[in-house]
Image 1 (cartoon, helix red, strand yellow):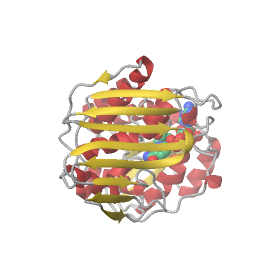
Image 2 (image 1 turned 90 degrees about the vertical axis):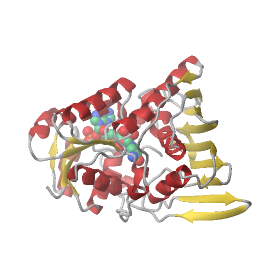
Image 3 (image 1 turned 90 degrees about the horizontal axis):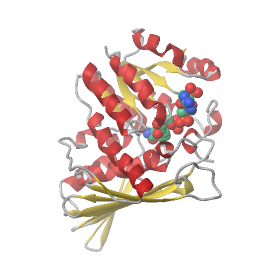
Length: 367
Ligand SMILES: NC(=O)c1ccc[n+]([C@@H]2O[C@H](COP(=O)([O-])OP(=O)(O)OC[C@H]3O[C@@H](n4cnc5c(N)ncnc54)[C@H](OP(=O)(O)O)[C@@H]3O)[C@@H](O)[C@H]2O)c1
């Protein structure tokens, strides 16, 4: 095998706009199939990419067909387990969109299936291969900014209620969807796992979400470190974080989004001097796929494995509990023996992204 053959499961916005164009930039991965419930997508998307379309009812047949090696699961979060678990049980590798699932129990079941079969599974944390984020993670952990004391971030958008993430409760909402980015960033900047979680939320009565549309999360980490982030579906777009150490501060923006024009940038301020670090846009979906396929082809464990996903999931579950109870939720002390490393940065050039008007049967996330 020289190229890993992927089936895309769910032909929604992220598949059409980012993954399907992006995989064409890799040299070790190819699109082989689409799994969709939409006959128009089955015809048009499959024809556009020269691949075969399968219905969800035929999923087991696809897994056993010998025509694919891996699936990219890009359904709404509440369906991740339904498509990841049987694939792993069938020995098919899984690139799983974030967040891993819509409950801790589902995420644990996915990890158990992965461990039982030995097929590879990676959570699609595209920023683990984006050069700017990788540089910030590795510099922070090697002490370039001194002892790290605080992190604060905002990641917000104006999301349509009619989009799949707009009406499926907490696990489709802003914390699992967008908050996962600052959460995953701070865990990888600090190189540590939080020990306490507190969250407060609010809802704009003029909007129709069935969950808190704006949530502020506070995390306590070991060694006197604190973090906060806000995630929202009901504001203008924002994406930034500030990391404060005892020697320097970095302010990053943009830092979480993807696209052909997204040049991740951070300003490092030390002793009153500010230095700007700007990174060329890269093909973030192609990069993560290139990396995952290399792990499959070379029989390596991906860094963003099930344990990495679970470390975020347990915090997302604690945020849900804190929103319900109004109380601080304590987490068992935990650690990871693996973190994002400098050699994970990849530099594939951005693919052309189809505009929203070119997407087939998609209710775009934002107006
Ligand atoms: N990494 C990133 O930057 C990034 C960005 C955005 C989203 N995501 C993740 O990717 C996943 C998909 O997000 P998206 O924005 O592409 O969502 P979306 O546009 O709503 O697409 C989801 C697709 O899943 C399929 N589907 C199957 N059963 C469904 C059901 N009961 N209800 C709705 N859709 C169903 C549909 O495809 P068919 O019509 O083909 O069946 C639908 O188009 C989510 O887990 C999200 O968190 C990641």
